[in-house]
Structure formats: structure tokens, C-alpha cells
Length: 203
Image (cartoon, rainbow, N blue to C red; front, side, top):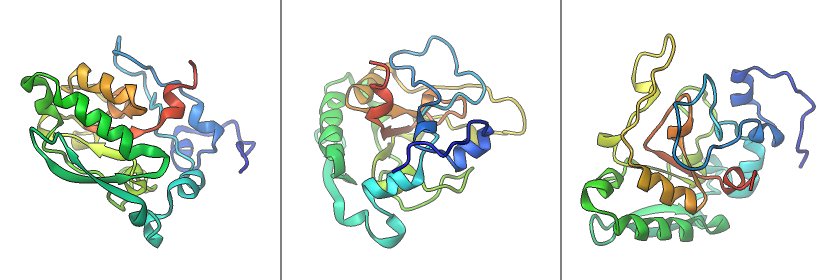
């Protein structure tokens, strides 16, 4: 696949809707605790090349993703309900490891990780209309009671960052290749998606 489309002067909305493979790496993902809220339009991971993701994980609208989904228990001792996530690239295995490590956290911390708000869902992203990473089976949304999402609030001006997701949970997800939507200017603190290429690009 071509890694670049030769267009270097895209606006932020154009990058969200028409990202090349190389565009996905325009903003470095800041691994580890955030020192300050993300800068305006700093959304590392929100630029996704649709053709690449569909080639890798399938097109959910054509029924290509569902046959590759694996079922696994989430926090088996604490919550224990089954969730579905893709088996492509071993994403299900990484999420099993995430679940086991979160299970070992103190109760007041792991409470933010259940009940979950969803995993596989063949839908579009609310503000862009582009395929959601949930439609590829690579994303999980945690407990909405501990979450903040820029799109739930007035968004006709500057965005005021908010977060209540414990750092310990974020660190576990990042250890296993998942990025966190709480590191976006357009924050989505319940959201984690499997994007190891962004976590390890600068390593």
C-alpha cells in the first residue's frame, strides 16, 4: 500500500477524514503520565487510514470483522461478563493480559474499568462520520461513570480538558499496546484502542 498520498498541507478536519498511512504518525503519542492537558488539536491516534485498517481487520459493513472476533471474560473475578474483541494481531490476547492486571488493582481504582460501555460495534465516529475503531474490533470503552468525553459537553469554543480515569489503568493498557483517548485534545477518557505502532514509534 502507498504510505503517503503526497499531500502535506492538510487541515485538521482533512487529516481526520483522509489520513494517509504516514499521516497517522504526524503527532507523537505521549506514553506515560500526562504533564499537562493536550495542546489544541493534538489527537495522537485519531488520524486513521481507513484502507489500511480495513485491509488489516476487515470491513464490518461487509461482515468481515465478526468472524474474527474472540470472546473473553472482562475482570473475571470482579465483573466477569464476556466481551468481544478481534483476534487479529493477537489483540484478544493483549486484552486478556490487561484484564488480569487490572483485576489485581485495589477495588477503588479498578472500579473505573467496569461495567464497560462497549467493545465491538460496527458504527461511525460521532463527529467525523469515519469508521470507528470499535468497528474493527480493536477498541474498548470503560465505565462511563468515571469517564469524560468532549462531545458530551458544549463544543462550540475551546475545549476544557477533564479526566477521572486512574493512571494505573492507563499504564496497564499502554503496556499492552493500547493508546488512550484521554491523551487527545478532543478527549475521550473511557476509550482505549490497540495501536502499538504509535506507542513504539519513537522507542
